[in-house]
Image (cartoon, rainbow, N blue to C red; front, side, top):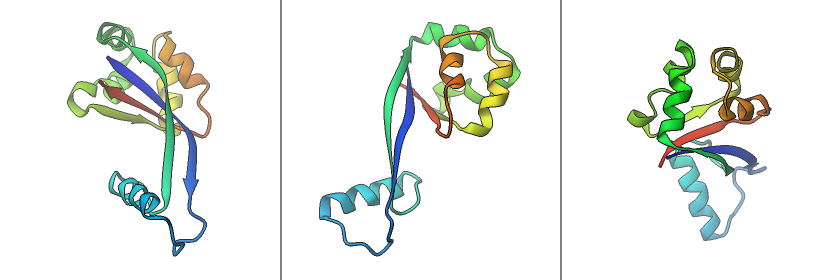
Length: 115
């Protein structure tokens, strides 16, 4: 199963030296650990789900760039699709629900996750 997660909100601390409750401090540390800047917390929501067969069909019917960008999900388990990838994907990807999601993506990013 492949899940599609979309950034819905980003929180950035206004002041780096701001005192936070211990629970929030742990969230901040975790968000930093997973690759975000200090004080940045991303909130995402699942916007779609595809079976492995549906995902394979998207790859089989799309061009080389799509297969290169999102074809290694089974190897990496998670792939980010950022704004800079969308234009190439839209011109290279077959007509499918994932392409429709990409068309609506503005100022955000998607994460594809192998579940």
